Image (tube, rainbow, N blue to C red; front, side, top):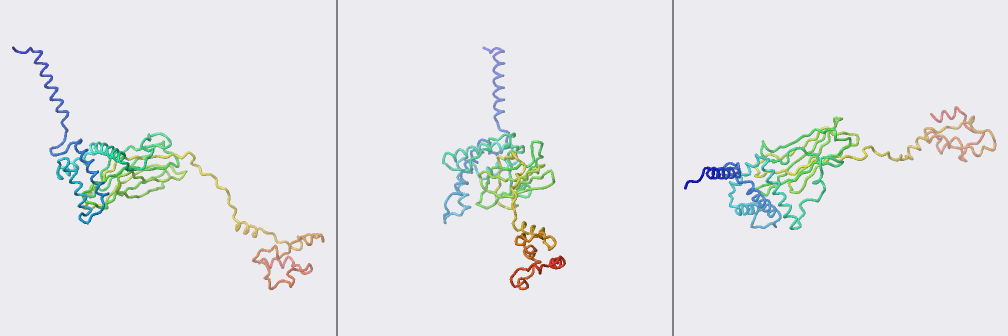
Length: 343
């Protein structure tokens, strides 16, 4: 008995839907490239192996490079992947930062969960992860979420730059934060260098340069004077060109803006300088003359002598003074004598 046309139509619709579902599930990857899900599992174990090699005690039977290589090969063997397949897949994903960022987002969460389960502190707890783009302390990052830096002449320098809008105020501090992972087949001391540069509306520039190779959060911060307003902010990632088989993955970047609640400096209490006061007193001291001294005999004892009121550099040396160290009333110097002493 022949099926009815309606039954044939329904069967064809089901077959077509099945084909479309299979096509949509098939990853759009070149032949020989490991899938994202599988690559996530491999990279998770790969980073665990790298951490185990770094933490392992040194043994005379193994060099540092040999121990790291053994751990990495064990991670690849666990997933049935050859070194060539892993290298070609990593090269592919490094050229597609959207997919690599998606993979490393999952890898980072799994590594942090594993570290918490074993009580390992990978980075200090902070509240920056929950920041939004508004508020006195805000995460204003608007650039790409992942960077790959390799020690070859074409990929050893990455950078970004942003213009500051009207939400930036005078005195705002700036901090650039990110996490860094290094993948290497050798236990090398290669470091990632990074800088943060802030240009202000008065054409002044402040910058800071640092280095890292760790997996925890890394930061660079610039403090802004209270009357300077940021105009542009830029950052750079750099590794020297070399033959080292390694590369750095910079992820989870944040640019934190700090508004100062009071950008005006508080007045400092005046500190009296006794030396300056003494010098000022000497420079403004009035030299009393015989004409300006009181004529009342009752005030004679209260009048200071001319030698006491003269500046030190104009006083008569002790060896030339009167024997009883005081001038007699009938020996008082005249105005002309005082002026000559002052000269």
